[in-house]
Amino acid sequence: MKTNKRWGNGARVDDLVTGKKLLLEAAVSCFAAKGVKSTTIEDIANVANVTRRTVYRYFTGKSDIISSLVDIERNRMFEQLKDVVAEYKEDFPRMLEECIWFTANYRPAEDNRLEITSGRNSAEIMPHIDNDESDRLWRELLIEPLHNYNAQTGKSLSIDDLVPLTGRLALIYRQHPVSKAEFHASMRALRF
Image (cartoon, rainbow, N blue to C red; front, side):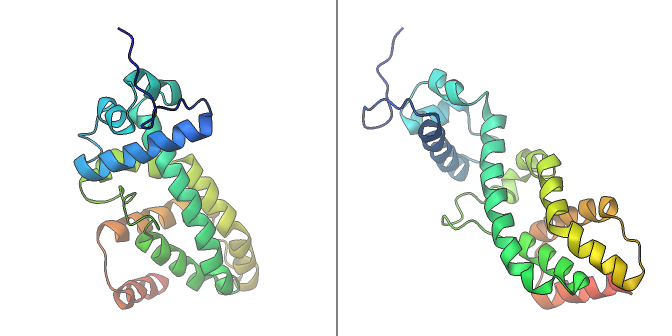
């Protein structure tokens, strides 16, 4: 059966970037309304006013859509994080604390609709957050300041040990928020 469903206003979208953007916006609406686990490809197609086949033209499935959303927001977050921690590059322990604090408290600019990393959505999203791309971005941000810190202090902290810890602490504090004072007190306790 042939359908005449087209992108909302009836116009065909042949541009890959535009098509993906429209579908991701539909997915965000569905995830916000129903939760990630309960949302189906059919739901996303209906909100975008397209067929399931069109969704599969742009994405391999729901996991691919989730990965795309997480990648977009992760990149935005790390761009902002670089600016936030720039003033602490000479104080590595403080820089690390600010990285964890910022990441744990980061919220998307778009009225929190993309906040799919906590609450009912966290189990579906976590595999897409703690991955090789997150690891690469943490390494890129921390490697030079860590190297300088090790050289200045005579320590030999390993980026291989630090990156997983940093990302996971941010996720833990995101799931179990505390005040900034409580957070900094906990971080100071880790320094001994």
